[in-house]
Image 1 (cartoon, rainbow, N blue to C red):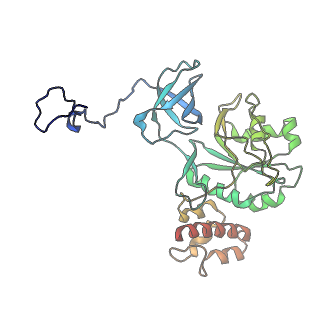
Image 2: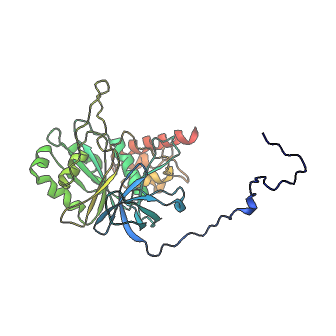
Length: 336
């Protein structure tokens, strides 16, 4: 083994250059002025399927974007091979400013928010009237997320052949939220599709709902050329179905400029990212009653004016219970 002394004058010693000798980093980024515009249709393990004009192009995110990630619905700028041919890959170099964002967290204690969909103008909250039973608390949470993200809510009630919609409509009817009621027979013969499409034409609509409500079946009926598997394995122990939609997917409505975005089935909808003071905005039937509340009222205290507002018949007591249940969940998170 060759050894060198302290004062060697050998000229073949290999030295590592110092940091000052390396090329300095720069914050300058290429402008990519010739980049093409595209729409993100779906994201799968770092690969993004984009629509560029009339071509479907596979792409990946450029390093200069850092941790900024593109999601379904994003308008992006791409460079590279955009022929759409097999085994070609383009690069996403810019993500355009979003007009709306649908976010959720795994639960109210989770500080990491997940962007589900960008640039949707409407949120279709799909709920079965039976099998499985309606979950009003989940509906309320979706409404909160819609208002916070800048989306207009739409209620889509399925399986009306198993249970009447009256009770649920009484709970939400006075919110001026548009709704559509469908049955399984109407979906099969197509009569319900026309009513749903009236609410979707000309809009980008994200569909959300927990497993088993018929969300993906409805999307398949709206976009029949994009058949997706709707029947999944049911766990023999828990009775829960496996989510058959594993990632969000944007699909164009035929003979329309509207889009539908199918999202994975929800088991929960955390609202960690929503300021508790904004939750009241998702309850427009209760919001006028807060005029008599003391300053910085939590809407869950003895002096809250909402109790008198509801007692006078201005709103359904179940709505106030829903609001306070949501607020109590957020307060427990804040206190932990």
